[in-house]
Image (cartoon, rainbow, N blue to C red; front, side):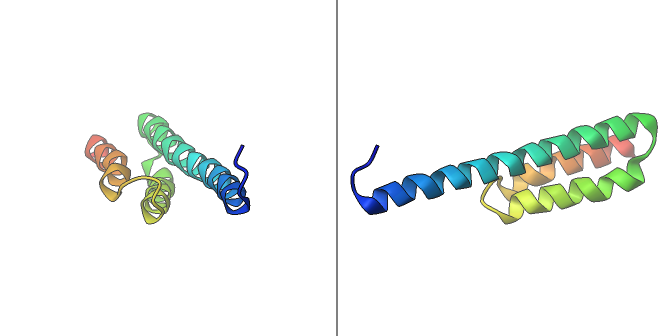
Length: 81
């Protein structure tokens, strides 16, 4: 545990950021899985909007690179056509 006050604050903010980033990545992965499941059942229109939103959210923050966030959407789009 750090002794300096600013280092203590930094540990606290880093922990919060880690939790937030983990949740965002998890949301993105869940959106991809939901889209793939909907693709199999034939309901692509309603889920694709959610998937794109999740990818944009992850790419907007420094959680995932823009290319990494767009890959699942591109793969799913290719599958559906």
